[in-house]
Structures are given as structure tokens and as C-alpha cells.
Length: 158
Image (cartoon, rainbow, N blue to C red):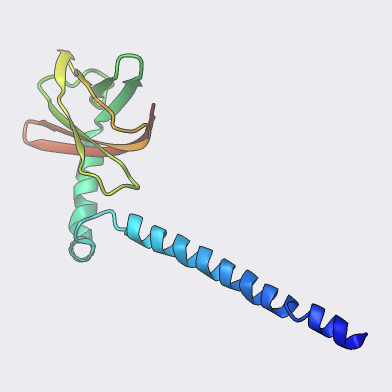
């Protein structure tokens, strides 16, 4: 009777081994996808950016001293991106040149350029054909009178 139970239960340790092998295989697959899909680096040359960190901080301080502000609105029904640029007093920033790009933060996809046209003083708009909905980083650069103001804003576009 004990030999019958012993032969019947011989597969139980192998079930544990198979269960652990399945867990290891699933974890290895998830790690492979995670490492292959996003490097975790935001800048193309992070070491160079780190070496020139003080210069970057000075540029950000001079940018903040301008007091310019960017307001962006996404209109999903018309696929229209509207950007308003105001100065430190809250008035529209006239004579500015504005460029914008949309970047997917978790995909290795080239930035999506946005062609902006002036609709009013300090107001710009452009039509965007989004390849996918979700989180996008809007990189806006405003230039006027030799000053350059850059800002990145995370937006959920649908």
C-alpha cells in the first residue's frame, strides 16, 4: 500500500519544479521586453549633459527670469493643438517665433513635428495627425529678440 502511494505521488516535486520554471520564464520574458522597449535615457548623451549641468541650470534660470508662460490646449474633435504665449505681465507675447514637437515618452519613435501658424498676437495653432493616443511630451520653443524659452509639458492626447 505504501509503495502504491509512493509511486502515485512521485510527480508532486516535479509540479513544483515546473511551477518555478514557469515563473522564471515569465519574468525573463517581461525583463526582456522592458529592457528592449525603453532605455530609461531621456537625453541622447546623458554624460555630456551631466558634465555641463551648471550651464544648463544657468540657462534655466535665465529662462525663468523672462517670466514667459506657455498655455497649450488640445482639441481632439478637430485634431488641433493651440498654443498661447504670454509675457511676465500676462499680455500676449507679440513678435515671437514658436516651434513645437510631440514626443512619446515611452516609445522609440522620432518626434512628431507640429507646423504652427499664428492665429492672433501670441497665439498659434496647428493640425496634428496623431499616430497613437495617450501621453505625449509637448516640447515648445519660443524665440524673440535673441531670447530663447523652451518648455516641455506632458499632455494626454486622445
